[in-house]
Length: 396
Image (cartoon, rainbow, N blue to C red; front, side, top):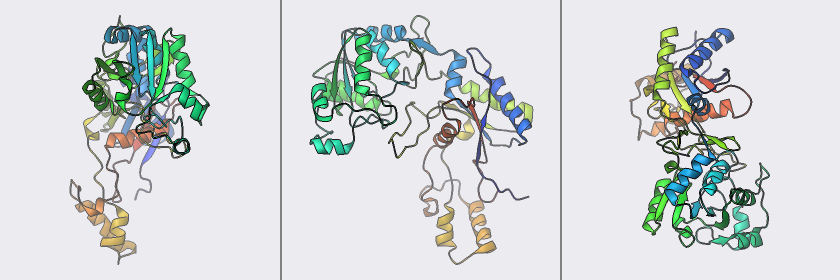
């Protein structure tokens, strides 16, 4: 029988995960039981995706603000620390800022404007135009910012992040100074021991600061990249990808977890005979046109995945074929011609005009973004997503 459904993503409900839980058994069993209960079948090349949150929780990968403070003090000296380009987030960065401030006497916080790296806005470009401010060159003090723009609260959260971050620093016992700039070297008149908190541009920022004369520069991936007094850590990403757990603890991004995805793959094959792909996913990579947030606050969409998820899509654009190569065909003849083209396509379509408009992104970024939108981040209780039919095409 001809299949009438292509890609389908399903939330899979799981038990609440605690430190030490066996995710290989829990995830594989949850997916298999869901298929039996809901009446669908697992197929080869289905994708089982696990949110990074439960992986880190099962690993017990947590740390306290005291551990952050100790690491900051050891690596940056405990005096004046410049903290530049953080994202505006109560969940992501506020708890990190608390630990950083506890490890310094003074924090000079340099915020990018009109928005942070992932799109959270302090201001609009219209406000900058009205004020005659050039965001590419102008450095604003807090008093100048308030004079020009007053109090600005975030459209969705209702938070004045400038005041919020200032209060976090002072409550932690450090002196706070706030400046606004978009050039990394603008921090150097204020501090030469610096933590650059940008995520996807961190290597360039670090290089520019060191070339500009900074004495010590740490990116967030340099903080808690090793255990401090038995704390959790992430050797590759440090504080990047961390989330607030409690008022004084953070959950770090998962540590090495390739054994996990391969273990789930092997367990499902053993129990069902199906060869599935498995990945761990965090934030997706997509932009909200209203709030302008493009989401990806994790260092990568997927920190671990099985080998079948390496690469990018290799697809033909059906509308291109229909409008060009087979523009004079219709009905069954058109269907057969397009099907024949798909079956005859090369393994590498780079440069082929019939593939233009297909999404040139990594499979893990595309599937992880789908899973992030499917699972959400609230109270669904579905930290696992099963994606079926992703690798299908018109001929399947």
